[in-house]
Length: 112
Length: 116
Image (cartoon, rainbow over all chains, first blue to last red; front, side, top):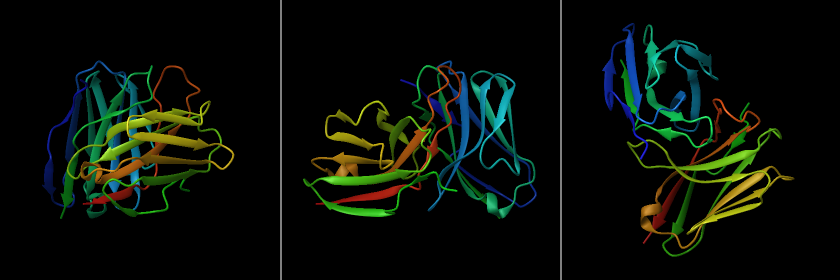
């Protein structure tokens, strides 16, 4: 079974703090993704990565950056957290041979 | 612009009856479609998918129908069970690249409630 884990289930941060969200997958997938889920908006793609050290912007990259130093790990960074970044953050991965993405349990981030 | 739309935010169905969830898309380049199910405080889990070369795909109680001319897909669940209560997301992608990251575009989700 594919396992995607996220470092925290719940986080509370203050405006202006730097926030790191970590994601690890154990299936040697090349591709990893970060989404945010907001009510009425569905899942929106922030960034994705198709290889180590490679990254591409998704649909809403503003205010975020990412890091992929190892194949199994993909980090999302909020350089200076703002209240409009309060959301559920979901990490996913897949191999290039399949469209099915496997998701982690999510991190609910509250920025005060 | 919302390329994938689920116009019903919620749906309530009686246990044992059929649940029909709908999804519309605008981009004719999409050629692969997926349904995900999400429980609260969990990540989405893959449910069923369909390629644009088919118009129907069935897996147990779940069937997905694709109408390319109308750019519409639907998920049928029959019979509906209480454990089906969740948020359902449809997603679409372009398969054109054989290998590589496949970007999924998600709809807004429909909250399905199955009443006993």
